[in-house]
Image (cartoon, rainbow, N blue to C red; front, side, top):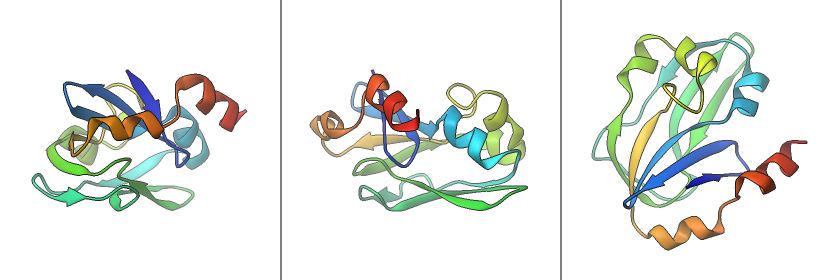
Length: 120
């Protein structure tokens, strides 16, 4: 199940854990990424907390935690090579995995159709 936020994060939710990244639209707005800072495994965040940071040739931007939860894994590949986010933002360019405090909270996020409408 893919869900989206108005801040341009995507979530793929499987078994109470969400894989989180930034959308293709966000990457297009940012341009080529040159730096990614990821959260610490074990850190807990509330919805809309700043969980990660990206820097591009154009600007720096925060990546927000889409729902309440605990970081269970991060993607070290994108810290080593931020261009992975540019080349595959909704695949190999994922940022972190979040064990959701309440999976039902995902129902309040945007589905793909609503997100496409938001970015049209």
